Image (cartoon, rainbow, N blue to C red; front, side, top):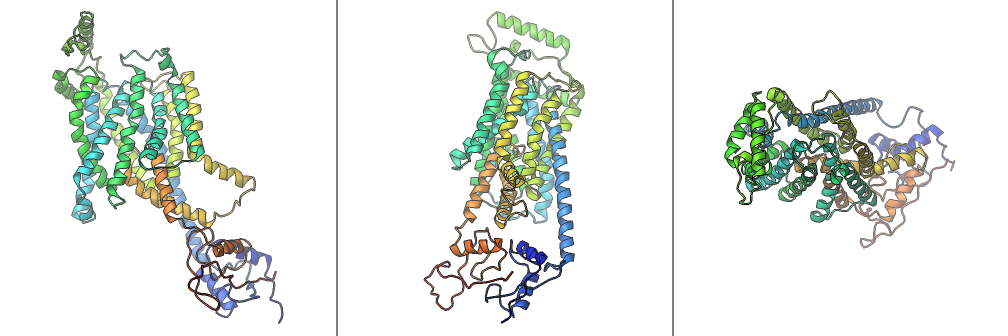
Length: 560
């Protein structure tokens, strides 16, 4: 018989690209027409059908539509990224600015920033329940689970608000918050049996070193930021350990919900209810922390509300009188630090109020904080966690630069230790979050790895990651997504391990045939690089007891 015609080089290239993934229906029809209805690989000496230069076996109209969809998605993700950076930056800036006029009222501020989510959440929950979009399987979840989540979140929120209120150098706040990376790794290692790579451990260790560099002036006593009467080291430690209840809350959500499908707003709405309820008894230890007598706690809460409305309650004369009384009580050995352990009212000397800008600062923070949490859910659901990680990494130097601006209220000059700590922490974050991506990029630039379209295995891993992160939005509470990256990474790895099945010898051979541009073997199902495997149909020389790779498949040849 005459030898089959050799395909054109362009046709062979198109075939090789097509065989990198599962064949499309149009390609399958062309193979059937060329082989008399046989599937690829079912006969010997099959000639590749010669096609025109523009004929790749697909519908050009459908390709254009897919390209338009991809372009629209890329634009949407770019808008989400830009919006996330701007909103998250404003959220962090106003989180500190609101504490300047509300400095005397951190207890009220803690209650307010928790309460604001209750009406915002139930404005969505009630209509959705009335329309039946939040079903009984969600409303029947025991409320005690939400109470436990709210308890842990209330602890984390109160500790963070007080730390932000009393740390005078705002530039180090965003650097201290990166301690969530090693803390989340420890929590997930302890409770979820998580595993991390050496580069991730290295990145976490570098972040810890950077935090020590930032705190060096306070640890050595060379800092001049003690002018507010509160130890900066103590509040820095409080800020760091606030990540512990935050991470425990996320772990408990995963274990308590057991993968149950639940509306993220419904979950966070009920958690906010219990978080606010549990914040009320927390006002008592909070008053002791700020040397506020319990007898003055109700009046302090009322004055905090007046300050929110722009009316000051503590004026210069009152502040000077209180300071003199506190100094005299301290000199006589009485007051809170007295030997009898009693708390005297004269021990509390609040500074002067400056509440004129409090409404603007506080409500601006509330608005940006709501937008920030909405964007987190949108990015995790429709985009990729890499967008969030890239944005949060860029926010570290941006926030430091913003708080160093001379026109920003409460700004502080950048210290050398702040700059050195920033460089070290950025190095640790980059190694932890982006080492694998940077490694792949460098290898492809050097030509060691194929720079073309990702393999099916990579595509499958990306699909798995996206599905897991969409569910991870349920387990991450308000203002916690950036800090709990290690926990989300562990959930992705766990889901990937569940999907992974060892490849058979037949699949391995089929993968090499694809890479060589040969037609796939009929005994292998699925795309090369995936982990799906199914037994071949029984035929001559086969028995049910044989493994899928124990019989050599029919040879397929292409004459080039």
